[in-house]
Image (cartoon, rainbow, N blue to C red; front, side, top):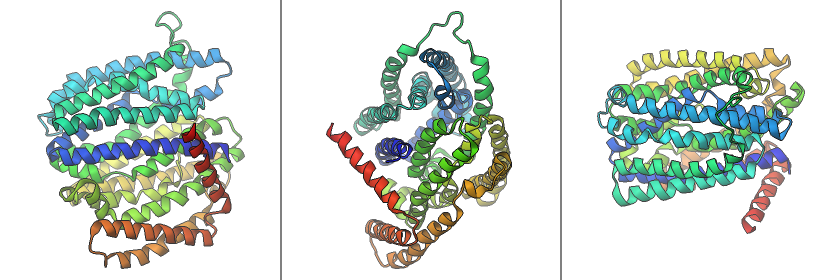
Length: 487
């Protein structure tokens, strides 16, 4: 079994478990809380993801670049210790910013009650910054099994504390306290594991930081702008609409989480193994991942587009049925997700170019959001994000062509992607026509979705989109997973 595929599969499985449990928590909160409280809860995480994207400066992600390049254990310890010191300082800064800007944030988001919740929530970054670093460290050390274990542990903490408190109290204040306690328990695990790398704050604690910043600062700015670009629609919806309306929008305005799990897991494995490689070798690894990603992404995007309303209602109830339109709009981004366009640039150490691209996307997204929200309301924000995503992908493709000085077909198996797209569309037409005759929305989604996937895999195998190698790979991974469960 291919080692990289095996590692990515293991990480994807752990992330899928996290997605499944977090989805359960999200479903429960949507049904237990009022739309106003749910909107406030989701705004807290919008605030954190935006601020952490600004303050982390790409330090956790830099572990995937620097640790594989470290030659000795002493160098590894120096990199981790230095980064741990920096992240600890940044965590405190984030907490202070949230606490002292709480009234301003509440005013901007048209949500006076948010300021009270932010007092509690300001503790959250102190703990969660370290856990984010820990996960990047163990991935940089290529310890995929440890990463999978920590992911499972983290989400179990959320399940026990957050969902437990929500079921018992339905009190938004106590639920936010539960979020903080869960983060604290995760911090304890990460801190104990990182203790062996911890250095002092004395002389030499930040030695080598300048070299790290040469890579991290442009990457951090790129990630910062990227985070703001991704969150721009939600930030503007929070500013222009009520918390209740934001709750509806935020439930639908998301890319399919399963795809994010796949891409993040693949990238976490690919980047350390592409770093320092010859362009031809990078292209081979990259192209293989694109083909495999498409086998999962194209059919999932199609089937969820067909049954978007049924899916949203099943998860969150009829009160949030309106969220389906935003979900469908966001699904139009998924064809782009067969690849991560900045991965090759990042692996080559050219993070400044990624930073420029992120700035282009941010400016484009801001302009489009202002224009399209005025024309189409909340739908305009989702449309703006889709357009900006496609435009920046075109920019990346052009840069990859110039940077690597060979045809993009080396990176993208075009004929395989076209056949895959056809295999995804053909059964969609038949299933969509037949599904309308099933009156019950739940069974329409289940029977229609199952029929679609069976037809897709049959057609994809006939078109040689799915190869015998892919079936063997999936079988090997399943067997390996079952062996791990028995241990």
